[in-house]
Length: 284
Ligand code: ZN
Image (tube, rainbow, N blue to C red):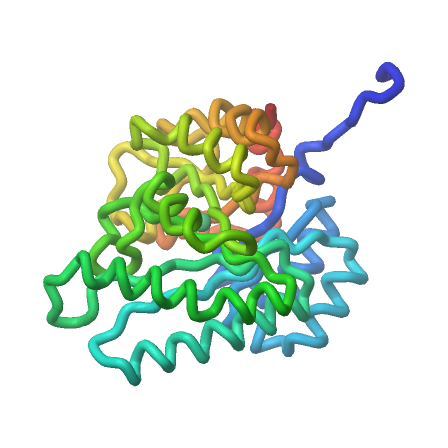
């Protein structure tokens, strides 16, 4: 027996499935069923799969399965060569916010964008990101959808995201006020010597919105598509979990594994089973 007041958190209930983990194997409907079957506590869909199923239908099925929606992936990609491109990105982000609201997502994850094609102006790209977030923030606030800036590992600075550390993401948040925070993905931030104080800073300012887990393999054969299962690499995931909890984060670990060479080739039920087992060692 557990003493009264003890919260029992099963490793499955404290896991959310980012659907990228089973991208080639399962549709969103299959992911929802799989999460329910394996007792997961949450799901985080990508927009392509969400649109495939239909937003209203997905919302209904996710609610019926009793899953929390730990995020919608993804908005962002604010940088573009011209004003028309930037305006199109802002329109698309507003649609993403509406989709996130419809499925009651805890946040819309923002992968902010890298350099515009042909550009070497990194400072300008970062300004475009700041301007883009500021432009969509009123819509996000009205819809009740927090925006979660996800800093990406610097290897993606040119092509995906010019926001590369947690402090940099928090610096973007500070002047914007409420309705914007950060998603901490251990794959992207584990190397950063300033990451622990940055997590504490995110907690103090109420900006810690999501926690993504996977592992960094040695060697990593492809920076995008060779992420490891928790426990197979070098990231102190438990240490990160303790840090985000100490900063006030209570949500589940969201498993997000892009793995063309391994996990995307496996039986999806096996992937979920292993993820649940490994998550047990990643909870504080
Ligand atoms: Zn992530």
